[in-house]
Length: 403
Ligand SMILES: *Cc1c(COP(=O)(O)O)cnc(C)c1O
Image (cartoon, rainbow, N blue to C red; front, side, top):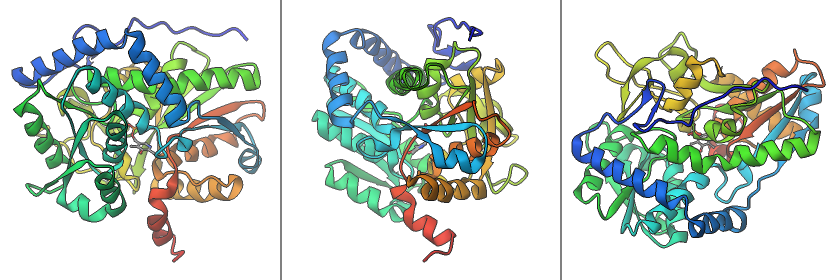
């Protein structure tokens, strides 16, 4: 098969832009701190001892490479294209987030930082980071809204058992937005000794680049594994998009393979024509959020709108800048899947393959199921299964009335 080639200059540019997206829309003191991290990062990732240690931990701690798996029964059920999964759900801690959290924690250690600071919403980023910091041996401080602390009991317990300092944020709406502000304030008290760890390919430069680089192991493995398995590349690669880290992780290795369709799946929640969704690329407009330019779901004043998805890991009103750029270039197709289709995919994948996916990942599975039937049997769809459903069991039982 002759492959169409896409060519990209290295991204982002010197100033942290992907086309017109990304950058650093932050105060001067924070800009200096971010530039220091960028400079240190560019030096440290070149070091053999850093790469060796990270690769060692990926292999023996995370359990990489994660397998790719051909879903025969699910594919037969859908009656068309063959569906494959990249099993990030099998990583230690059960999702892809450990990949970039380990990278960030290790970077902190190599930069001789004393404390890693982050915010968390549902607690997934907090748990992955607390895990990585425990392993690397560095102090970890997680800011979390009081409302979220009450909702997310198992994750709160995990962070505490792992030794993280949990800061309960009681200002404002007592949720993620206020946790971000609280965590940044603490960080700015001493940016020389502290480092901030962002949970997706979002935030000011260099975070979208760093998090993407740490996640790109997923696509490098998957591309090689798929060729070994099938002798050729998949026809399409799919991933769910919240901030966009698991999607950038798998897409990066395929960006230049012009014949491989790349499909990002956003959460349509209760419907794109209701306010209850989080489809930032599909329905948002250009704006600035949390220090970077991207598509944002915003009101007339540029304030982020409240967003919603059945999957708490996807309900963010912005999206990674590289996704916005790839959307404008038409290199990636962005589509959406609603709550009902997501739940249907959870149950179908569980009963056809014995794999219970995270609600987030089920969005990508749902879209693969939706298009498989209309594609020929020889076609192949590779889905990034970003995480396992253990964290969602009670919720799924409740909404489906199975209790
Ligand atoms: C956090 C999370 C996501 C969403 O984050 P991205 O940065 O868009 O990948 C997706 N899947 C799982 C399992 C998650 O925990």
